[in-house]
Length: 392
Image (tube, rainbow, N blue to C red):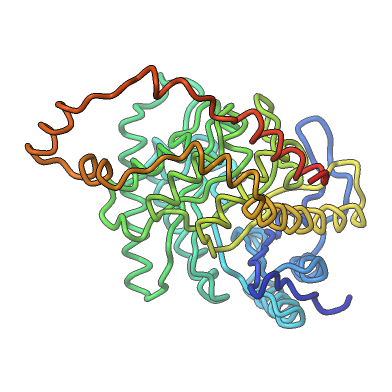
């Protein structure tokens, strides 16, 4: 395999990343076994480099099998480090698998068994050590088993409290070891649990403010997770951005109301993908762009490479479409006509005072005149589609 191609676009480097579990996905699903052979972490890293990515992310047991001997672990790490070096790849993010093993069948940090909670902390500390060894600075927590099928099983108040205790503990562990991690919580409404705690990005943002170290903790929203609940993913990312809490993002695609599909970025809802890229571009997000997606089960590993290159290509195409949309004269005119600003009103409404309240209450507004003019949003949406379809 050749060295990775440049990912520089417009003078900047796009930080495209894939997880070992993405290109290394063997195509198993609940109704069928694997369709692709398992690959070594180093082999997957070389594929990621060949696809033109910036970095590789991993769960602890994506890299090191849970029961591997110390000798085997050292050999895997050495081979993996060589692959990273060969393709100039970095490891921006690491995480812990707290969902595959049977011991976590009723949760990890939120298990009703104190021994399981302690083991989850132990496993996570060891995984943080591993991530730090590769220079990772973002640590993601997806609570795939943190939830319930029946609320008869546990009190959700206890579940939230136990989750808080775990994150507080691990923040202190990072501080104690000078790891410099920023933690990112990943929301999902359901699957594999019937109901998962911290189901949306908004839930996570509210939870963060109750932590001992809220400045260390942000979010890692995923397209599929909010979309499978029928929510507008772009709006959830916007809330995280506005709060300064978008530490990481998982890009894939999803049809609303379905199981977690993890499609190639842009494969299902190209307009949502466009507005997501626009949001990230317009507001200067410069963190990793992580494709947490899987190739179709129909594919061999050549198809997996097509999938990986397709994720990157779609993002780049949409980024160019964003630039075209932003400079389109008719679009700019429509926006200028509908976005009315007033300096005096901005001062009056921007900060409360008894005088401003009194002045505002005394003002006369002609609601009929304000409602009389159409906003041209139909035309604006059509122009967006024409840009996406290459007709403008």
